[in-house]
Image (cartoon, rainbow, N blue to C red):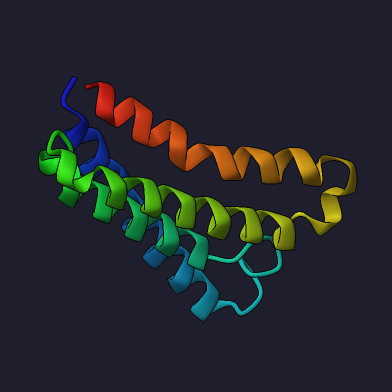
Length: 114
């Protein structure tokens, strides 16, 4: 399995979803934003775009520190977003935040293995 293809597909899907939800929000204000922020898809698209661009250089040890720093930053951003959005999910809020923190590291591990 070529992970560059998976990252590219995820990137284009996130960008397409972002623009579709943004269009729906523009046509009928509150249609999407009452449930979730469409900007989350933009954040995912940016993260996948960065990973897609870096994939060819991941075997180089010079970039290992940068990858780990990026994973930490994305983990904290995802945790903040999950904690902020998760207010209505009171008892699951901590679990969702922990999953959001761990997800960038899991993605980095999966991509580095292949």
